[in-house]
Image (cartoon, rainbow, N blue to C red; front, side, top):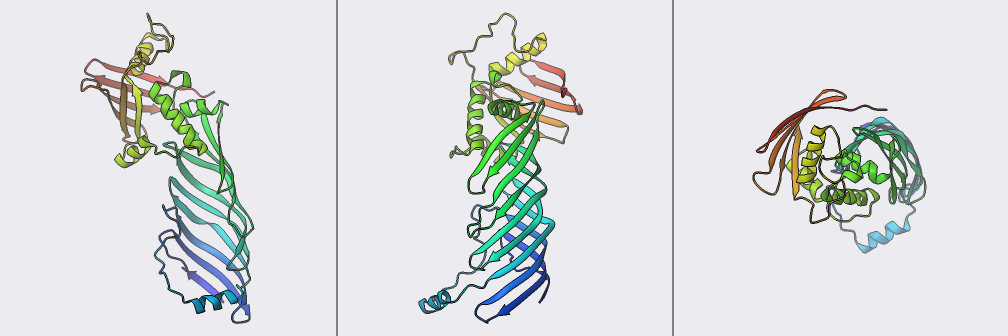
Length: 335
């Protein structure tokens, strides 16, 4: 039979519209099903509990259950073409996919083979947005649906390109963080989160870095409090720092000798010498203007920071507090 714009599933987690040809032959209780289907549009929403849509639950008596077990599940051979417009969203993922799949076996235990590849998409990871840059998801058959992953996502930081490679399987993914130019994983992560080297991180930033590595490697089961708060409040930036590290950076920038403060030792601070924490919350007004507020331990330790990107590699930064007001220019160069 001919199917036109059929929507067989319309749930909170899955919505499909298909067109194609379906052929059913054989006995009434156990027919063989062949089909060539085209997915015109699909929506897969990654909810907190997948598969718990609005479908009704039916009570089945023991007699009918026994009869159902006695029947043989119909064999099937279904080819599915997905030219694009298959959207997968939720849990930080916003993406569009295309590909071809073939479903064989039986309807009760289908085996899926084929590949899906991203047309476009982004994924929020470690409070940053990574963009898909190729790869695919491969279904290799078997009654257990556990596709293999080979995906590449990139994030353009100030002085490097961060690359996340997802391999393994959907049930047990293997995440690896790389960069151009090449750097160790902790160094790449420090540049992504703070635009700093690991040697320049404050005690609180180092704690966030360790938490981010656990999240990336899938070893952390705890709640990322800052990420949760940032998403709940709608801020684009919400991070911890330290008062002295910010002041030292500003003083060293003014002296033209970044990382070396005149009249002070560059030896690492002890815990007693480390400063009180600060909290910065900020928002991007548009793609070029950022406004942030940094709060220290006292009411007087409040600063407002504005950054305006004039050109892709040139920006102007200004900050003001009860102690002082500063303005400066910054630039970056990619090698």
